[in-house]
Length: 435
Image 1 (cartoon, rainbow, N blue to C red):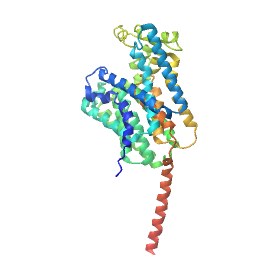
Image 2: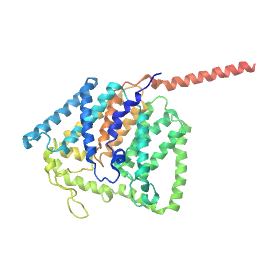
Image 3: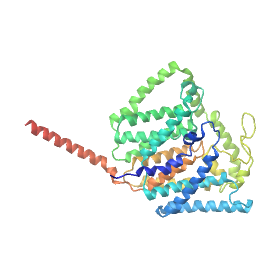
Image 4: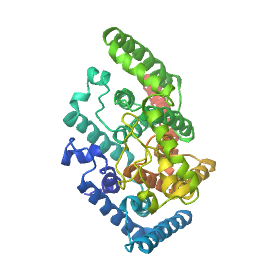
């Protein structure tokens, strides 16, 4: 009897996903307004574990990724020297240092899976789905009602709601590669749930991710956009959705008003809603970004007084020397580390994806999923800074891009040929029996 331990490969990425509130609320409860100190200590432990993985398995890295790792380590070393020279301590502001340490998590996940192979995406998605739904049912049942939707009561934060995007993509890919009404049904369960959680940035990210994923799936053997599948994927849900929307309008006009208000906020993002709020924050900090565009303010940025004021009372949005809490990944990196900071995170992944797209040959469905997820993350980044788990998923993407496409990608066609041959044999046998 052989005991398979392949499921252990999902533990590193699940450990990183556990930094999200959907996971740690089972320990600290939903009443916590800010990230608990225990989660911060846990994140520091992930930094240490990731550094250990980099040391142990660094020899398995691809040359481009290894060089990128040395650049990041050099940047961390330079920031430490700057801290010691100006403040006589090696890490004066952990808030600033953590923005570079997050990249260690990405390198750790990448190095681990380069050494031991990729995890089962189905198992990762299974754990993620169980945790998210359990959290909603245990801690946020009150938000799962039409009245809560009309009152704009969100059960999840944006980073937690965004985790439904890879679940939806996985179910879509599963349906297109293997068929099955269960996968299709759960895909159409995720989409209304994403809408119901009322994070417009997640809506836009999903609208970007799905077409991108479908485009990439054209390179996946076994995926056939047949007429019956398109009927199940487009026409049938469209009819049912229209009927459901009609019933919704007739019975719950306040819900429709809430949806209309959200659409108006997206259409007029520069004048109303959270889009206007983010635009004001961007305008407040752009003079500072333009003052130091190349390498940013770094540690001095933490000491800069708060530039963004609450439009409702004209008071600083946050207290000084607590970080500037940017709701924009690009603004965050540009303020602290300039253009170099943005390129330090995005340049190599974009180059690796472009290289993979120009390579001939098939693409795994999971690779298409991760590329589509990264593509919509670039859009999501205009509204929020990255969470810790985003760096973990980026490491998983890099590991998937570095893996040679396995032989099993050819199996769907081979299996289909075998099935056709078996059917021919069966027909011959029946004809022989009849004669």
